[in-house]
Length: 182
Length: 130
Image (cartoon, rainbow over all chains, first blue to last red; front, top):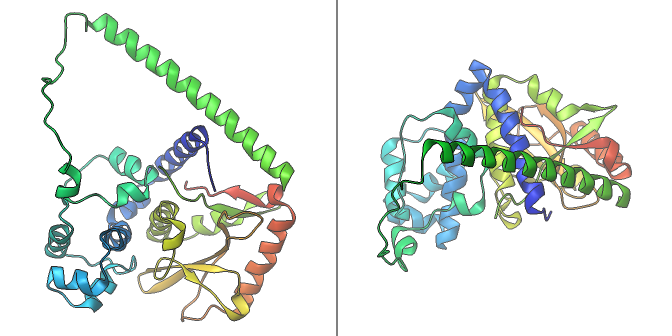
């Protein structure tokens, strides 16, 4: 289904609120944090297909058997070792992040999933066309006073609230229009 | 580019039956379905295949199945794509061992599919991840 940018923003906001609500339950929160395997399995399959490899080819690149790759691509498997994940990251030439993080990061990751985010490029693909910028990193200036930052924050808050209201309205209008057409 | 799909749930008499079923499952099951469905929403249509989604045949023709295993118990959600558009709609959740989906469960899902097709507005709601 094709969705407009505003509808998609609304859906992401709704999902974020729903996931956050669920996470307020401690048992559920631990369960979601523990369920690392589901996302890993999806990523292995999507990354392998993105690289144009068969399971046999990925097996060769990781020094494992094809049956192992098949298991790793199953979201019900869930028994990955760090060693396995490092081998896979090496084969795909991507980074592997294993670290403690706030739940807000899990929320942001899960509600903003996309095929693109699930299939990070290899180092060479990512930096093939990279050119080093001559411009130095932007530093704070005298105009970045506390007052101007506060004003900017307030403007941003108002913009976000307005965008959310507009997106909600557009989504509801779309739903009504679709229901009438159906 | 964001999500490829948005899941919808079956609604009957104003009650989201998929949400009700998921809420009654142990937290690890609910969490796994949340992760699974969110990843499916981000997966391009052509890549919906086993073991992520199983397309059913015979008595269950027209349905797909998402099968989650937690503590050696299989938790299943049946759904379909063709309720009037290509939006995947979740129709029935149940727990049942074995590989084959019992006909009775498919019959329930197929009946619900027809109900949704007859009145999208009353019998379908965007999947609730809370």
